[in-house]
Image 1 (cartoon, rainbow, N blue to C red):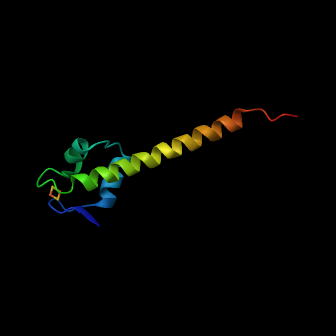
Image 2: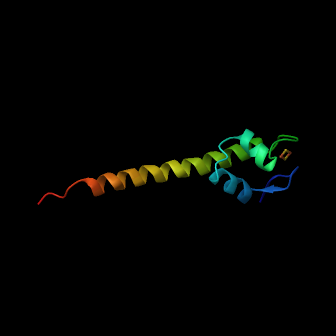
Amino acid sequence: MYVCLCHAVKEAEIKAAAKRGCGDLEALGKTLRVGTRCGICRCEAQSIIDAVHQHRCDNVHVLDFAAKDMATPVPA
Ligand code: FES
């Protein structure tokens, strides 16, 4: 699905850029030009960035929790 019609940028491209480190609209604009013309796509693009980063944070918590469980000795 296209998010930025002005620059023909799809949701998948924004997700990929966010996963590669684009953490905000400014970085996304420099990378894919999203939001740099009419600006209508900016809100949706930000939501996609937030969702990607939230998902990453959720995974980090799960991994931290799992690492703590593995480090705790099992009582005999
Ligand atoms: S739709 Fe993205 S800048 Fe216009």
